[in-house]
Length: 569
Image 1 (cartoon, one colour):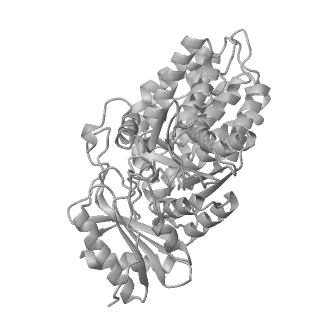
Image 2 (cartoon, rainbow, N blue to C red):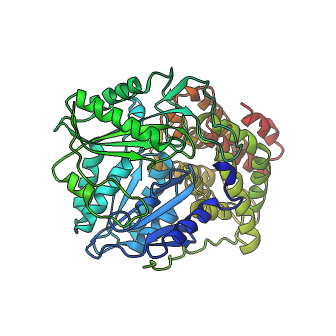
């Protein structure tokens, strides 16, 4: 499947293809990219907006239209949408009572949707969120990230779509969504990894006869591998774990049997029968069974099971009519237990007439280009492998922005990373660049020690407010916090070389993440697989302060290790 993606902008191309297939129902907006329902239900008081990384189709775009979503914001493959996409889609579709954002619990999604929430509230638009966190495999007591959001998102969006068409208020929809999430759990297994769009090879190797148990929809490894049991045995094991995790209540469930991309309809319908039988053996009635591919992981060979313990009226919401690309089984089963939206409002451009930081941008661009492949390899070990390309692409665009507009150095980096670079780390680095840009003096001179320390500390505080990470969580915060602490307490003899001291601290903080068990971000989902691997985002912070030292203190920057050494782990 991934061999035939377009060479340039496959996500936009696919969005246009969906709109061509449903020309009366779906409109595409491409700057930034989002899709909207042309004819939302006239009784809606609240718009429903969702989105996430591409590669999970037909989620979320398949639920766009009456009975579903008002707008969808697709990110790049396995990468969160940018906050600007979410913000402008929400502004374009907001109703009289505002907008409800449906968010899967992945770090990048949470951060970008939360930034959009802040921007919408600043504009006076009522907004609330529903966070979907159904993945039982990541229900880990010492994880600050919490459970991932996976296939239960389909259930949430379908039920909320029906409730929104009935005129529910923002508060009612938010409460209902939270209730559905709390009563839903999912678990996934895979016999073969998805194909990497970059390499054309499986993202990880599984020997014949071995399953990965507890995989994620971005291709994250499972919590364990196991010899493949008979399918009936596997389904009964998953059923027992899911039922044990559900809250108490009536023994009536909705059962979603979801294919991860390469699992056939024959297999999914067979699994649904086994699941219904297993539930009946345990005294649980299946009111609704929903087999099909709803939340894929590109072409992963595997499936997930989602159970939602139903409350009164939810089966009626499920059976409510829809006009969306994706159709659903609508009827309760008797089981024998034996118009285009307004154009987006452009964000005001950043301006900066300072002349000192362009050399920093050029030096950082050179360093990132040299180590991009190393960063990619490291990210493949702990995430989905897109970090090197995202960072390098953003830095290249910042260089072009500086050439075209006259915006200099870190201001150009801030502009691009805040408004154009997606994923988890893109806008977070944008905040860092924004604070550093605010203290760059004129005349090509370096910022003072006090200004550099204040900017670094302010950037750290902003990133922690948005992302919630703390030192020790194995994120870019570890490198940035080490840098801020060093700058705030430099002894007099080091005050002449603050940039080199800052870079040394950032390098130490970044390399130390290799010994940490990740508690935030996508690396937290792979457990001990990430041990021994330094966090790529922390390394990128170290490389940034290395570039600052190279430019402003070239005589002492020779104390620093080469960029290739920093990332060659």
